[in-house]
Length: 234
Ligand SMILES: NC(=O)c1ccc[n+]([C@@H]2O[C@H](COP(=O)([O-])OP(=O)(O)OC[C@H]3O[C@@H](n4cnc5c(N)ncnc54)[C@H](OP(=O)(O)O)[C@@H]3O)[C@@H](O)[C@H]2O)c1
Image 1 (tube, rainbow, N blue to C red):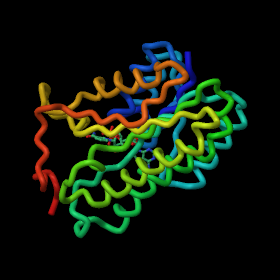
Image 2 (image 1 turned 60 degrees about the vertical axis):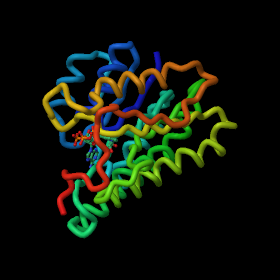
Image 3 (image 1 turned 90 degrees about the vertical axis):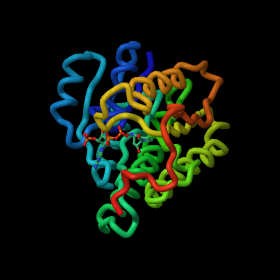
């Protein structure tokens, strides 16, 4: 049984991760921002799941959350940086707020959480940090300039930190999925199901302590990869 912290655990991929890990008997501390009702439902369904509300766009809120976890003295075995924001618009169409939100949520928040939680992670006998990036760092999709840039920064941070932290026993994994159906598209779709990605992440978490899944790309073989996707507002 591991103690696992999952950001954005009440909705989409994060919800599937929380449910898969909870069914496997792990103890989960998860965060939500706006999905209060969904968080309460999950906590009621699984006695091993607890939720905290944190606005991960807010630096002070992140620091207060980190301080509480550190003060509790309980080790964290796994940190899953899942919460993120995708804005399907060309760069020109985005508001200034949307540009900044993508940096804050997709890069600054995971970096601050890793930075602040390292002391409690290092209390675990086999600490693991999982950062959910995206296949967009490997393919060229017009209209995803901001998203690709911040996810590339997150993938690079994960890779660079391995050199600093692996010698201290801290493992880091990057998960880079292509389209995951958190959009309510009727199934069967040509996208990965959130539950399928969650199972893959649980597999990475349950590897033997001396193994680290470095980078994992996952895609549905039928999903088209257009150069300029039709879902981008332009
Ligand atoms: N879906 C895909 O195709 C896909 C593909 C590759 C990678 N990813 C990545 O996978 C992760 C999850 O994606 P998803 O599809 O599950 O997204 P989603 O359904 O839009 O969910 C976004 C999650 O981020 C949280 N969040 C948003 N704003 C927040 C804020 N200000 N403070 C704290 N939490 C906040 C949400 O929490 P609340 O609901 O509580 O507000 C929610 O749990 C993201 O990092 C995304 O970039 C997704």
